[in-house]
Image (cartoon, rainbow, N blue to C red):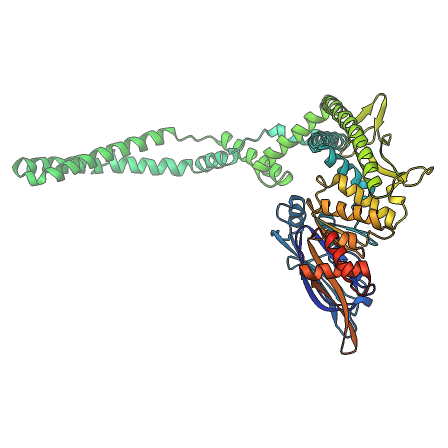
Amino acid sequence: MLKSLSIKNYALIEELTVEFERGLNVITGETGAGKSIIIDALSLILGERADTDAVRKGAEKAIVEGVLTVAGGKRLKQLLEENEIEFHDDLIVRREVAAKGQSRSFINDTPATTALLKQVGDLLVDLHGQHEHQSLLRSETHVDLLDDFGGLEGLVEEFGIAYRDAHAIIKELNDLKSREQQLMERRTLYEFQVKEIDALSPRAGEEDELENELRILENAEKLFSATERLYQSLYEGENAVHDRLVLTRNELEALAAIDKAFDEAKAEAASATAIVDELAKFIQQYSSRIEFNPERLEEIRNRLGHLTLLKKKYGGTLTAVIELREKIGRELELANNFEEEIAALRKKLDAKRRVCSDIAQRLSAKRQEVAKKVNKSIVQSLAELGIVNAQFETRITHKPALNKETALVKLGKEWIETTSKGIDEVAFHVSTNVGEDVKPLVKVASGGEISRIMLSLKMILAKSDRLPLLIFDEIDVGVSGRIAQAVGRSMKKLSQFHQVIAITHLPQIAGFADTHFVVEKMETDKRAVTSLRKLDENECITEVARLISGAEVTETGLESARELMGLK
């Protein structure tokens, strides 16, 4: 709902702030006082075109700001998040129009495009009058309204899932066909690369192993000489470490027999002797394994040289070479099995097409049933609003698919064009005069008649229509008396499901108001200024009486006003 609207330096409005209430908000006022100016200003924050001529003379810019309660608005939240704007339960929308021509828009204090402002407005407000914010006049919304009225959201979502799944398969199929052509062009190259890599069959970690082995073979003589010296020094040579440690151990054993204080030293000497024995044993065994093998040395050098060339050619590292081999191997395998892969995807797509066709036909049949109920209800409602000879048709049509490759739904032998909502194109048609053929709702002439058609549609679809705010700008044009009373009663019923703001000049409508505002124009410093004032109960009675009696409010008018307002 619209909580508040602030307008500054717009046309005749110098500055005003108004707080709207739930239910039916009615705005009345003398002709020329500026009622339509308020709606024009409101349309700015709904993304309508900005006119610099509307900036108040002498001001640098006009500012219009609205605060709307939008808690639970999932589609709005998604839209804002997609545009990196924070979502809050209170949405602040501001539009600034400079006298020099620039226009700036803000949503929750974040700069926004006018196009985004319009998208937000389309999710929140339906404005009926001489404006473009009329969702019912956009035929693309008719299918959604029909589905909402019939409670078909579940079936629509079921089809939407199947539709997206089918298109994912089509994309996969197209990608595969595209890859097939690319692979056929690269096949010879891939086969050469596989052959070249497989000729060496490199292994992960092989390079480190070979380099370690090469280092050992290149230093075989050094390793042999060093280990021989060490073995002699530790074990077999004159005055070897092993022999000296044995003598030391024996001396300490003798001393320990005399004084227990040498026990620990004796044990350490025995341990050192054992360590030297093990070390000498390892060195002797290592020395015996040293290999002098020029052939193996040359083999390793050649292998490493070939691996180096392979690395330079295919990625810089052996890991990259192996990964490339795996990748092109898979590509070649795919190239050799394209027909099987494509056949499998086609089979999968055919199955999904059968699912889509089944759901689409069930959904279309349900829509036909719902359409009959809508048609009957709206004709009845139009009669109550004074259009007694109306005809209303909800036409559901299909289009043949232009591209059978991407078509998803088949009716009999014919492929049908689809969207994520099914195969149906829905359009409301109406005739309001005897003998006239029904015409698309979008082509019906404007005026009181179209306004009552809109109101009738809103009454039938009220509970399902998710737009929280409805604005009616003098939809009572051309109606009076009993019909005006019916229009007012219908608007009152609508306000049970939506916040309604209505500009009217009829007392029959104003009498139903939950909250009543009056637009007044006065002169300040020799300039006209428009203001908007909320009325208390007594002022409401007087204003309704003025609408009945004219400029001079009579006691009879006051009595009639109380009766209209249900206060008697």
